Image (cartoon, rainbow over all chains, first blue to last red):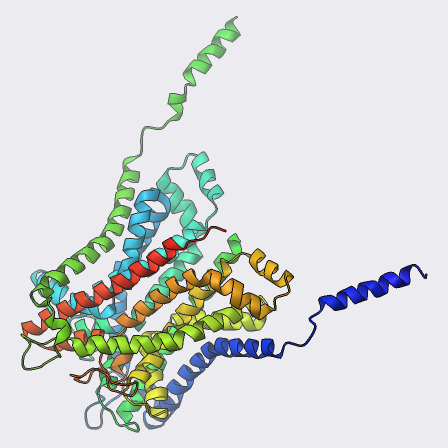
Length: 314
Length: 302
């Protein structure tokens, strides 16, 4: 008994001496400040939701929500203007659709090439080059779509095309989101264990068969997440459509005509000097809310997919 | 004897050559070239874009672009000085706001928060989502909160605060990655020598991560310089022929000036827009090179 006791006291003494000698209040203050900085991001989300919601609610007390969501005429600047958002939604969908048709094959093709075929040296050059595309300001893409694609190329192919048209905006927007789709898809394919590829080769598959039947199915959720994120970026893109697609809200599927999207309406109406309480001012927020909800749902879906994909292979 | 003979026959017919195929099948070769073509389209478009704006803007790519103010009447001599200085003002204050906040938030999430706690995951998902919110929505936030509710109006500081919120998620994400790359042993060594958690973070982890943070931040800021959509809602479209003289001053920026000139019908303005695009791209390129240079120069192998 007596031999154990001193040991225990020595141990507790040692443990005590390891504990910090005095409370570090400064340490706690700093920790609090850092936490505050992290909370700013939550406050930003909160701020976005609140600043969209309050004017939108006021908007919907004047314009019934059904008229807004299902109305087919958007004439906010007329006397007794109508606020049917469908022309803006259809404009957004047509241009996004064109962008997807361009971006998904090109983006996915680039990703497969970079991940499965390119030699290390080729990859080292081409991958950063593709990423430069992601760093070009969207206003530059807009200028390019209007001045180059429409006026030098498309007018020769489609003589009846309008100066402001959905086609040029959609094509250039598709080029813009290639890097988004390519780099996320490539990440997903790179994460597929090489054992799966080796197995396919050992069974006599060619490179193409391995890529198409083994790597892509294995990376599918990551690839779908890349598509969804790309689409969400296309829906939210503003400058290209504002510059190249024109500002007439019309309910049409003809890509050779001008269209207004949700984003370009917000940009056009918001850049004027609208009185804070007016219905036009509030309509910016109502359209913004719709845009935010649409992209939010897609983003959350995409983030979930990526998370699930990571869990499978890690 | 005969069994041995047949065995030898078999080994002869089983030569390595019979294992190799007949070369890559045509379908596979077409597939590969199609993939390469997909990649080439993106790269080719980039090249065409760069050549097009340079050729188009060439007649106006001189010093007048920097020394002269925009003008409606005299496009021959108009420049983009107010847009250039406006961009510099806005970006300087964006960095001043976003950088400390982003680094602090990243430090908290990476060094102090309990890993995989519900709170940490909530903030993480929130930041990921904010990074994908359309930039025009940030413009709406800036318009409602900074410009109107806080009555800061159409000023440099409104634009900077809005852009700071826009790039904050990118800065936080890249800073966290830089911090994560610092090995655990550095922290353990510091803590074992009796340093507190904050001393460890501030004197060991953070300095070791600075190259990574610098790279990520420069890339984030170069995104902010090219951003136009949110500023459309924050008053940058007005016709400005003076340099900002304070944070509450009116302003315009280069992307907005390009946008304004694109809307003009006269060809001189299109040339001016192209010249300003070249100027903007050169600035972005320089920032990217600096970022890559920092990364390569200070790349540490632990």
